[in-house]
Amino acid sequence: MSKSLERGLKALVYLSAQRSMGVTELAQKLDVNKSTAYRILSALKEHNMVQQCPDNLKYKLGPAVLKMSEQLYKNLNIISIAKPLMQELSDKTGESAHLCILSNDSAVVVEQIMTNTRLAVNAKIGNSEPLHASSVGKCLLAFCDDETQNRILDRLVLEQFTPKTIVDKSKLKQELETIKRIGLAFDDGEISLEIRCVATPIFDHREKVVYSLGISGPSSRMDAQKVESVSQRLLETAKQISQNLGYLKGGLV
Image 1 (cartoon, one colour):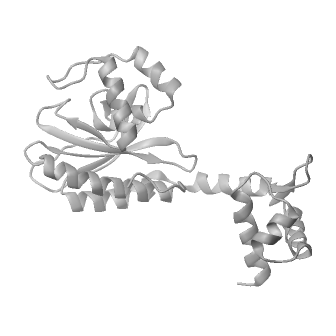
Image 2 (tube, helix red, strand yellow):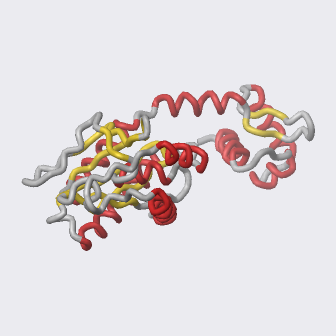
């Protein structure tokens, strides 16, 4: 890689880390003199990669970078990114994996990997899971912003499916706070006494949770020890998917 190209790329990385930067500051970051830093910025400015702030004449990322990033995210396909990792997760845990999105006050399954074991949970694509009783639903609800979460809770009917289903909104709210703190949601027989599930959020490039990733299995197989081991693999897989979607933070692992 040529020196000028390397310095130009580094300049974009430094500019992306803060709102704006002056020529002197960038020169120090790049370990070059001010005239070299100015030439780099001028070249980037010519291609709209950077622009100058009118108030202080410092430099910040330009519209060309935004256009490029928008095109990148348009080309990202959550299913193609998640499916091979979900398959690996299912193979390692021996349980079914499913990916859900929040829609019409439900968690809707958009992808599923079925395990080949004799007893398997089938969360069919297109099926809706209740937000208050499913692990994927509680996970999506927990990571909503406060305004959205309160709006959904106000209109949500907490149907009781089993004796374990949470039907008290204050208790549900407490559980959502716990889910957001630990990054894991559980369904311990709350929809069916024969099924246990665990879910964790998927973050996108905006640091928003749009999807939840879940693992489900029969209660006879998903004992406390297995839930613990599955949870760790689930967190690792979700972190990898999130990073592939452009999430830059460390994740929940």
